[in-house]
Length: 247
Image 1 (cartoon, rainbow, N blue to C red):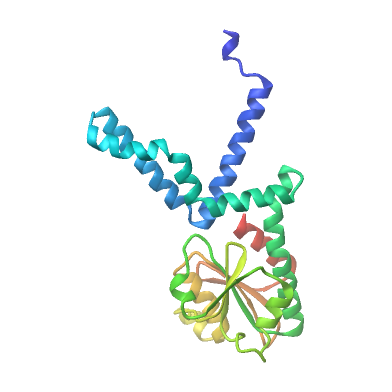
Image 2 (image 1 turned 120 degrees about the horizontal axis):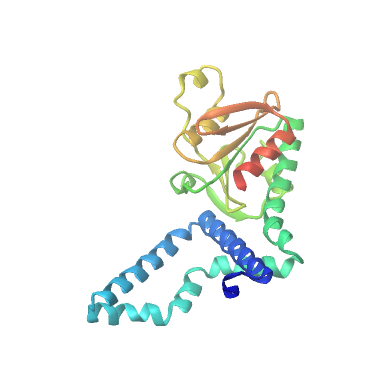
């Protein structure tokens, strides 16, 4: 009966594997790769069903996927695998491995918002979630750059041609600028908010995105989620909300 009692090493092994699988799943969800993963799972289920029903032709065709599944997996998820190994090469412990990218993402963003708030520089930053914002991104310019304080301050400088519109953050990168967003249809907001705030709220009414707005008149910081605006946030409060949205 002792063979059914797990050793401490077995428990540690299970916990580590479960944690890695969880982080990989989160990474795929954020990148949209989970759809391809579901597709591969569907092919596997069809193969299993065909084998049980002895559908020889179908089985022989799908056997190609079975024999070369590791190659197909690497090809489909090469971007995610490259990012994962890149993080491993640049970190020294498991905790840093899964938190460094997120920390590097919101630190410069918070610093830029803080400076723009102090200088009363109007800004609208939208963090994309599971629902892609491609329909809106088409109206702007794609730059796909690493987020930095200098870059954000340059974009929202009213002397540049890119300051008018929103910035879209995708996969923790500054993906698009000068994006035109839909305005909120809320009667309550339309009567007392300006165009920048209405756009910040409007994009969250029909998507699961999260927007950050800096008022050009007052420098106050607001955020919008699910069509609801939260105003006059401190940097610490904004930091917590960003962490909640990107965790």
